[in-house]
Length: 221
Image (cartoon, rainbow, N blue to C red; front, side, top):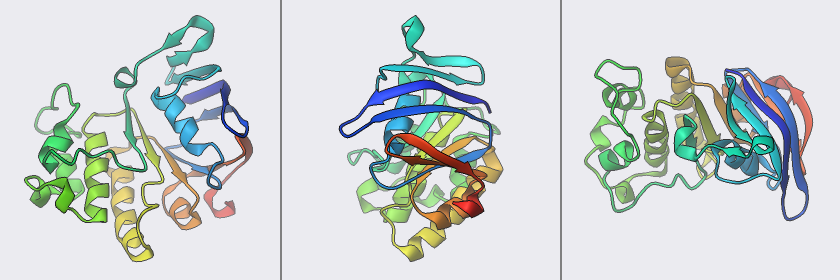
């Protein structure tokens, strides 16, 4: 995976997000205190916000290029996104949530088939239930499965464990590691928790007030 983030400029309330990065590790942590610009950066990559200027390329394919007036819509970017609030639909069943937005289900035997994704995340018994009846950890796994079922070229995870207590985090981290190892999907993992970063990530990009403060191995975060 090669993700190019060049000449990124996005005015925010208290500062301007300004980033120039080229990322190639499988799992990169976007690390920093609350309000550092982490979620805004993910939103730009996903196509959910419009920058003042940016060149964003994934494996050589331009997703955003303000110089050319190019901005692919989110659905055409090949990106799976798990936001902080998970964005599950309360009026749909787990199965309906999982299949929502998939243009065509992958064939049986595909790495991203419903059966395989559900098996890896151990959510088969949940398929017929309402999402309102799920625990916090179950909701996290369903949201992650839904993102994987889009067969993404890049997975964006915005503080996926922030709402969970320490014991539940410890139970969910192995599922995230299993996704990393099984699907080999490149990930950007937003967090301000050093334990999560050290358990899951290959490198850490630390943001402070919209600027890249440093780029280090996880053990130095």
